[in-house]
Image (cartoon, rainbow, N blue to C red):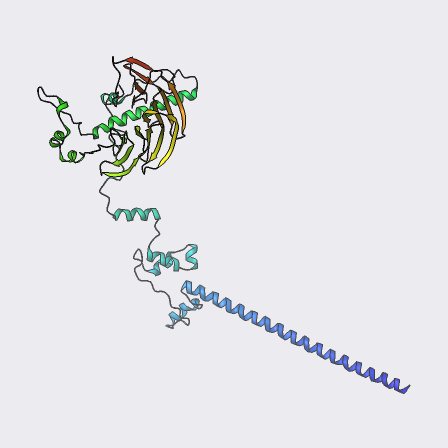
Length: 431
């Protein structure tokens, strides 16, 4: 029992000491918290006072006065210097309107001047603000004015130059079509557009005639002299040098007789002998493009739409070659052809054969467009009208017929000679 009591007494003593220690610690912590709070408040008040002082100093700098501005008058009366020294910006005596700054300070009474005359002093130094537009006008006054007129002058003769009706009548192609009698509106529009294109073409042709200052050459024979007796060597001796340089002579005695054709621009020459000799050349520079012997009879030859291809009517069929002499096509539809004609605006190759049959072949597609049997025998005379692309044929009975691929019968058939027709030609006007 004593032990327990003694243990119990011991326990009670330990608990009392612990409680006393806890109370002391709590008192110390409370004291330390109070001290910390006091320090914080003091620091805050110090910072607040410093901030107010800085604010006052800023105001004083703006006003140019010191904190003791009220006591300044007393010091001046007692001949004492002011305690606060602030360096003012001393502007020049004459500013802007040549007035001292002290007088201006006393006169200024707006809100801006209450804060301080610093801004207004700057304005007086630099002068009043100017508008951007007014300043630009003033700057433009000093600049030198342009001598020339700034506005574009109006054209005294607007539009294209007029063309006389006499010139236009030269190049007109018949009368104007009537566009009112069409079945559909679409057909009417097409006719109107075609008429406009024709008018434009006539105007351009008439206008470009002024640029053609050269005149075509001609022969004036003497009394009792015929022009058939004048040889080409005689003509070369009497013309100018540039024309004489174009004269050249080809001696081809072996494979003749020959047929020839020039391109539309007149630069390239194509020749074909009846015994198979075919050649293409640039006759101005005398440069040979190709030379081939097809090893069979050649009846006719024609350039196509470019100088890169030409058609040759050989013994059985018609062949197409390029300007290097390479065979491109064999047209077996055109059988035993005697004459060829190419229509450049329609891309049609017209041909006439031994049996009196007339063909039109589309070169772009390679298909037959039309074919008519004339029933007038062998067709070895043919030419085209350059004005309207109508094919003209000459016949052994002395008659001449005109054909179109759209009509199965001849458009015109007339008797021209009592004997056979050996050649036929149409002038450039087509009349």
